[in-house]
Length: 460
Image (cartoon, rainbow, N blue to C red; front, side, top):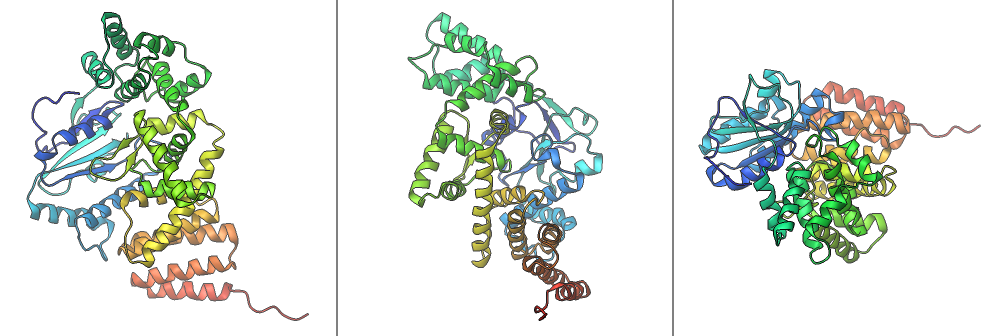
């Protein structure tokens, strides 16, 4: 992609990017024009169309937004003790206005159906922010300025392939241009294709690679059907074949890394988390797990199936890659095992961070919140308990209360009212209520827990 024109100015109406690859293009814009925003780049995820968003109610999406705003406040070293969700935008606006520097506020994957007030709640706070929103919905024409990006042009797509491997000779150049057309100019598919062509240099020509894509197998057609609506119309089969074949050529460590990513939040993944999960899942020593994790992440990146996060020691896996590996492995036994190991690994990490009085990064917390999910088992409840302890350590008592209420309800359902873990969770919630000033509620919960606690066994 080539950069043209000037960086976006501050808009009274936010510009919207419409494209299946608009997130990638927004990221490219942020990277190229970061210098124009000395106040920084803030990236929020609205989860409009990803796997996480499928289960979000409007209220839960608001909580997701408020959690991200709270993370921004911590990054800006603002005191948030006692600050409620409704006060966070004002707190951020005050600090960002005080700094007086232009900043870029990206809201990725805005869902359809948001009214004016709900959409405004996602916009940049203060006077110096430029809001850029990505979405697949076209219903916001009256609210925001539309920038319909479509897909990469033929020239841009060819240039992207050429970055990986030059097409030598007229026939190869024509085959490369044909690949761009076959893939509908889809940026991610072209990036993955370029990486595959680089690995197969001297083995398979552009023309041979193109011929292979024209005959997708059954699994690739299943992926294509699952991704319909997310890909350029008429090009689903070729794109699905490109993604699926690159994934299927990976060694097990790289496939495990992508399996794990498919169960985590759409966010960056710290290498330490991958190492911890690999060690737990296969009972490996730390050095063995590190070698396996490094090899897996390196191979996934070499095939353009994962990216290094700019400015951070972390990896990112595109949503389409996660969706593809999920569709390729419908039984999901290995992915389930990795997710369970991630729950245990994150529970341990959160427990250690709270004991040490330190806060985990926002991405790791996002993974923990997602894995806690609907609290189908006590392991998930234990993870959410540690998340709540962490939220309370950060001073977010309202969010900690919400989490602890969910833990109490889940443990009552899963373990029963008299189980020690249930009673402990009630006492934990009571302590949070007391910190919020609800002394009567805390007293009632303590009394309930005392009344439910089983007494000594009676002699018969």
